[in-house]
Length: 351
Image (cartoon, rainbow, N blue to C red; front, side, top):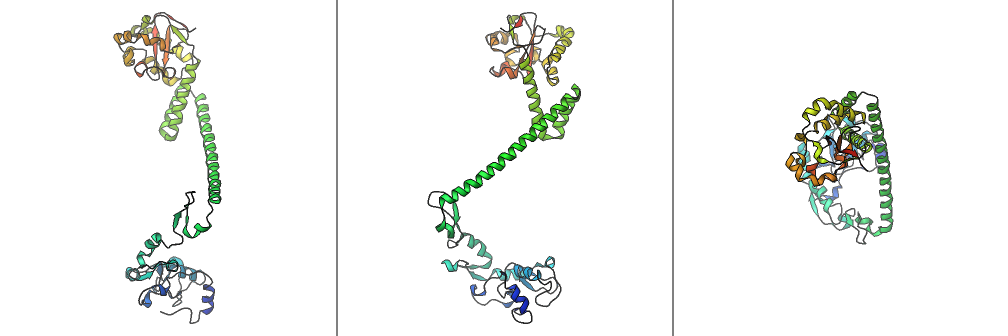
């Protein structure tokens, strides 16, 4: 295998030597190295080798790619070749290279290790003589710096630089957060506008479709509906029940004629459409929570009734006990989103 530093390509070789080339220094190896394991361009032991497709000449990948960037022919026999045509060398060649013994890169820094070529990378990562090995600063800043930079390391300067870098990242994240909040508010506004400009059924269909088609919007839609319930409940007048014994816990007969009246009163008060059916269903003790489900439990828990925050169904002898108003009550006294209590009388304004 010829050395390209002699022969008829001195001019091109001179240009090529202006740049760094690959190849392991031949003097670092123990014993004789077969000529077939040398790169024809740099005359050193092949590093990360590639071969030409037709003639199968092998070169260091860095050497041949640099060569082909100047002249697209094989350096040995001048056959036309491009970088995209290069391929891996045969396994037998890689095996021969891996069995060579080489001294550590850090020999000038005191390392006397000699390892197989295929183990060199792992050794260099752990070599204590590696000038670029990361080591912790012992002056208190806690930073990790390359060993050869430790003598010039300035804790104050490096920490200031780190703080500036982190401040920049924080500013970027804050900007990104602000943009995300803006986009979220815009999405909420668009959903609200769509709800306003559709019929009640259309609004419910829209929110349902949003949950199905866009999982990311599900939480937004749920929160908007919850906010709507809270706003409605806050607009109702506080009610005072003067006689809890007048509660109608099984209003089946009454609801046959009065259900539409209570439902209409809820709707006219601005009750969100998606909870009207639930509230009406929750007007019967069979749907009430455990603390209200039977006459016996209601008698036992009557002392807790005065703690309820009740809102009056406008114009009716009925109140709604909304979960959002009564988080202070025990779970066995609440029902989500709320329940309707209908009375024969004794419902007045809260003073």
